[in-house]
Length: 384
Image 1 (cartoon, rainbow, N blue to C red):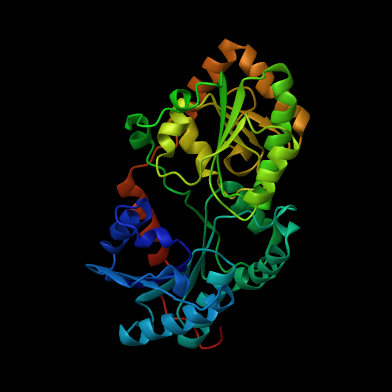
Image 2 (cartoon, helix red, strand yellow):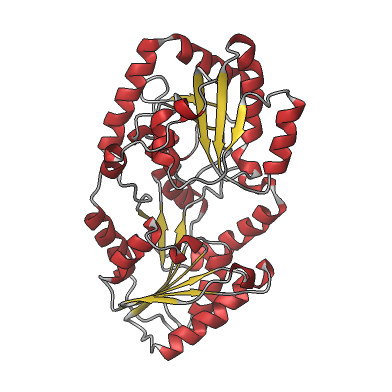
């Protein structure tokens, strides 16, 4: 089987990254795996080859050129590598821009496509930005045209079934792989408690700083919390378009001594393990991988009811859960947690038990991923 993937993860160009390692494993189960990655010329990325894995940057002039750049590059790959109907598949890592490029290739070469859905785009919060409203239109158009759908949660699968009466196939549920045993066995190399000894209780967030992540909610929560617990700190790992606004809000709320922005980190496990609580305030998530990672690392989680919190987490048992934007709920849950050592211990233990039930080996995950693509290996009719 020859596969071409279209996506956005530029960590594929980083040596020893988790996504590169997984892609090498996928390629070992295929004849060839070609991955086209949305990128700008300014990223200065070069095509790389590892055995039968090929990774290509689009090197677009600007973001508006991603879709066409990926299409023309994909067309060249399919022709030069002799992709054959019935033995070749196209997959896109989202049903938005990547999905549109994949669909254009499908129409050109009559090859089946699989769309991966990692985001709950049917959430009422998703359309809060102009770009996401456009993406919503893309998804509504593309999803019924895909021969295969891979989703990361039961919630998204059920949502697609409820909202699309014309699906070509039922969604395959395959969560994002998290190596739980590796997290449990990773030693601490960065200790937040030692790095920030001024805090008696450390809230930790790891997130892109974008509007839908609602990190501003966390800042309003902290503003209320420090009245009762003045030595509480919020450590935020990540970058994004909202960072400047968030920094200004920190100053406006007078929280300069309680909030620390530490940028992106490649060592989140140590940060999970040395924080007192992991905080997630998103409006929507497809899965919520950081919830899994934090729980596996033994860091209690307080989250909005998004992603896996919809069906895996139970309020007061293995996590604490609040409605989106409910500042009073967040403040109350954290204050009670700080004051109740028994609750802290029990949630931590039950979370680990819940996460351990999800454990799947890397080998099985790779087989499941490849199997979902192999199911599409059949020529498409002329009328698609």
